[in-house]
Length: 246
Image (cartoon, rainbow, N blue to C red):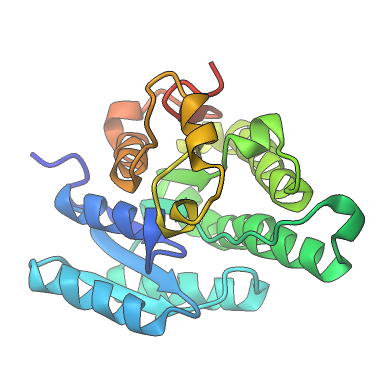
């Protein structure tokens, strides 16, 4: 039996990178997949077509996770289309890097809203149906930067550290309802974004496994946390970083 058989997953920001890998891996493991995209419309539609061509029940929704009302409407629509939501993966995120002395208020607000407020929005919207079902797994994508900080990323690090505090608080509040809340903290993952880094070799040298991770390895961790194999795990941060922060 597949690990996510008969489960319905909602994944935000899944048109590319780590989010896309999670959607594909969840589908492989038997899940029905609802996912969101915002600016990458063509990529979102392509992913929906790809999953459907493999016989997966899947649907993409154009929705802004940082907008409270849109998050509520999204959850209601997914429930109408799929009947339930067993797993929520809060993956939507952006960077607006810059040293603090040059960082604008707009850069700060954008990253906090998209990375952190979106996690509140979707989790809040999904609580009642999960509580009614007495079942749920919430998986929040944070970052090793949220654990150790990073020069030039005060806004991003703050948003990702906030996700960790939120994850642990939700675990404490909802454990009695059989709803689990965990976070996954990727390290240096090979994506289009990291390919452009000038100091890539320097980053790789800091990693005990001496290589970057790939999006599928982050997705594997999410499959574990979404499945009943992790039924006694909540409030945890699983680092997928090749030992970077060991």
